Length: 130
Image 1 (spheres, rainbow, N blue to C red):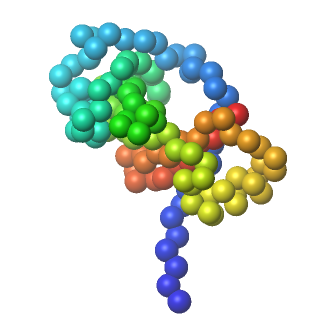
Image 2: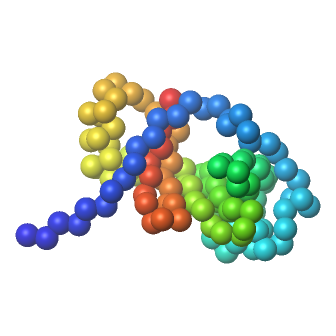
Image 3: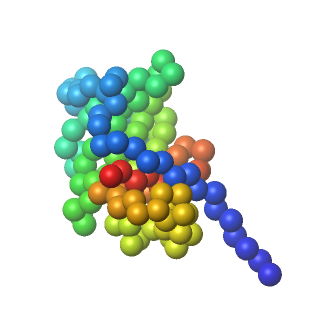
């Protein structure tokens, strides 16, 4: 019997903006950082960009909407390194193992917003807000 195990992290977060996250103007972002974001999400028109500082490193958070109307966020470091791709999902789109773990971890929890992300390390993360 062969089993494929994909580790996933579950995060429960309030729907508030991080304290150190500030809106930025696209003109403030270097072309190489913008290019990384555009290459990570071809065809997506980014509506806004925020800058958040994590461990002394500026992270540019590009936000847009995909063709299906769902939120997409591309995080790029100040060194033009892709850090994370976050995509809004419906809870029904999450793998059964994720839904089961969510039900066991937080019985009765009804997320208002769910997203799937892939981090630079290759780690898959499911986040639920509610």
